[in-house]
Structures are given as structure tokens and as C-alpha cells.
Length: 247
Figure 1 (cartoon, helix red, strand yellow):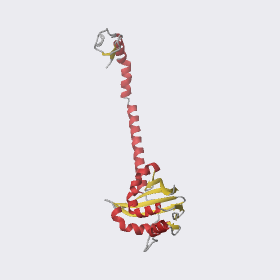
Figure 2 (figure 1 turned 120 degrees about the vertical axis):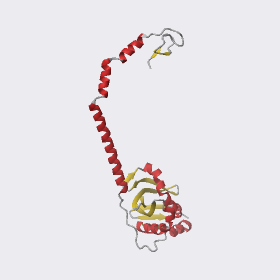
Figure 3 (figure 1 turned 90 degrees about the vertical axis):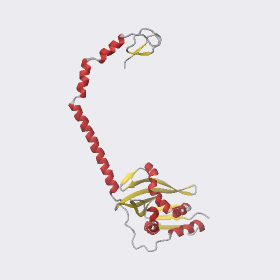
Figure 4 (figure 1 turned 135 degrees about the horizontal axis):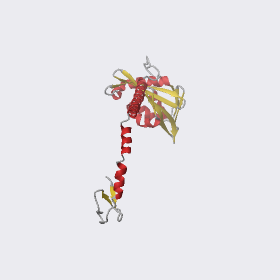
């Protein structure tokens, strides 16, 4: 609604008023007539209507919206494919009767400081995980989402952990990469990023995505606490080295 400003007190009055509602001064209604003539200019109305009903404008808008939908659909499809595709992981360990007793080695090193140095290949660690987690499926299995296995891969200064789960018979993989360092005498791990299938996840988002591995850390709580008591840890291609804490 067009307002009339009082020349005396400045109050905005309704367009129907002749005198100011506040001070009673006569309002200048000539400005209102000018505004109405400008607003009701036939040429401007015609141009505006032509733009509104221009068929080329409608086609351009429809083409633009269709293109956006196709791009979003393609991105969504590509993301789903990346999630479904399995990453490159080592095959499940076979015929593992009695793997290295890593938990007892860690306990002796943490409590009795011997041996001073523990070294394991990633095959030995994966065999231990397969043997240990076999009896903990009740903790790891979820409704409609079963736990299959956990696999580690060691590279220089980094440890990659892959968890394979099954959803309605299909394998779903989630991975995380960690850098581990000793800070003020304590071993601390920092997330370097992760993947769902082959879809990469930013390290910042993986800080919240660590909940995916919460059940695994709970099942390996004893081993995790023993590792944090060690004096040092080193990752190399295909192996991990743990240093006993100082006496």
C-alpha cells in the first residue's frame, strides 16, 4: 500500500487520508497521483506481461530445470555405484588355527616391559583379528547388517582399517585411514579420511563418521587399551612395530 508522508511531522499515513493522523497537517496528495500514473503506465504493463508470457522464457526455464535434475541424478547414481563397488582388500584368511597371540604379547610388553620390541606383519594382524572377532559377532551384528570381517593394511606412517558388513546378502565396505603418533608419552591417532565402498569421505566428516567403527573398537577394547600403553608405534609398508614402554 502507498503511504503519504506528512510534511510537518514525517508520519506515514494511509493513502486515503487528507490530514495527518498525528498532527492534523494537510497532506500533499499530488505525489500520490504521480505514483499512480507511474504504476499504471500502459506501456510498462504491456512489457511486463510480454515477459511473463514469453514462450521462449518458459522453455529456457524448463530446459534449465531438466538439466539440473539430470546432473543431480547422475551425481546420485555415481555416488551409489561408488558405495556399492568393493575396494581392493586382501582376501579372507584361510586355515588359521592359532594365530600369533598379540594380546598376550602386548600385555607382557605393557606390564613387564618385555619384549622390548614387537613386530607383526599385516597378515599376522589380520589373522589375529579374524580369530578374535569370530566369537564377538553378537556385539558386532546389527539388525539387517551383519558383520563379516575387519582387515588392516599398513603403509608408511599410516594404518588403513576396512570393515566388511553384509546387507541383505550384499557386502558393504567402510574404511578409515589413521596416522598414529606419540604425543607427550601417549599414543594418539588422527583420522586422515575414509571411504564408503570406493566413495571418498573428507577427514572432517570422518570425525563424525567414526561411529561406524564404534562397535569394532568396543570388541577390541582390551587390545586398544594395551596399545595406548606402549612407548611407541611405527607403521611401515606391510608391518607394524610396537615399542615397549620405558621402565
